[in-house]
Length: 454
Image 1 (tube, rainbow, N blue to C red):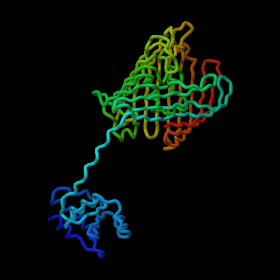
Image 2 (spheres, one colour; image 1 turned 30 degrees about the vertical axis):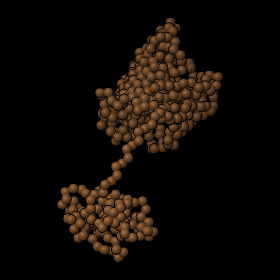
Image 3 (cartoon, one colour; image 1 turned 90 degrees about the vertical axis):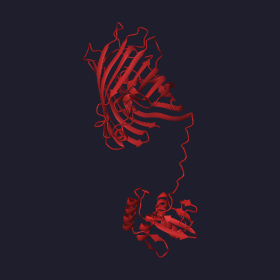
Image 4 (cartoon, rainbow, N blue to C red; image 1 turned 135 degrees about the horizontal axis):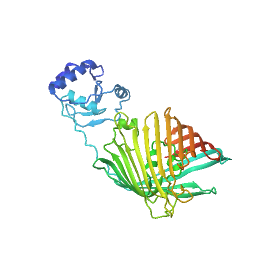
């Protein structure tokens, strides 16, 4: 009865018969009582407390708003009802669980047996989701000396994904493209099964993609430079490789995942504490070409996060390709690229340097059919001015034949993007390409693109 004595010592009766505890004195009483019994008998979120006895029931409140509504209307609202749990067998109607705990504590009554929560329902399979991505653009510019002005659909695909079991899912993505005649056609961009597991030793989130799958680098970079609506990224745009191909891809995260706070500072994509990796074996022609030889290309990426606590968004990556160009003559195709990337709430950066021979299509060859040695670099920056506004800048340089280093292709991009939210973006950009060491005129383009993606 020790707890009841403390409550009795610090209470007074109101005119309407309700019991009111003085906040400061009640706080002292509760703390003293808890010290005496040695356990925390209730989780007190507010020391406001009222009891009202009406029609053989005891109504208990711990917020003044609900008490005033009850006094005015006589309605207790949503409440917890304990039949026969009062000191003399009364029914207790309590505003919430905190009010129940305070009432039982005050009257030295047994604790309230809360009902066990219902177990979460097991997910049902299959689960299928449908999304889309559209890049709707107006372009005005000049190419090879000829001016043009046009509206166009740069991308229009339907993205169907599904989960078949906890470890097996799929993706099917038909893509709409415009051919050289201006006709819009549908082709397959992705079509793969995806198998994942919880952990394999040091590797978390291990996965396998099989079918028409991602290539290791483009998928990684597009999660940092997510302005694919402007146009394709450096390696794809200069024709070195494609973003998808027929084959198999395996990968995973290195070590445990970054903390939620670190992922907020960096990115939720590829959240491995020490980095991530991906390696694949492919036909080599990309998703836009048939296989013209029996060679299989090997592509791999290793990304290391050197300072996961101080700079979780900083990663150092290596990407390599070993294979043959997609021709019957099978010219060499190799890539060796080092990259530094940074993700933060204020800016995203990508800097890459590449050397190699040939390209995926097998067209980067000399008159004898020998693959050309190539090199180049690319730098991208996104400045995040606010939640709605970003500035972007990018510069690419490629020497398509290192035996004539003066012949370079240089591309400069600048733009401003308004983020409408939910994957909807409006981008205004300017794109300029110059061809050093040749007589080819400069290409220019001003473009407005609306991205609708969900």
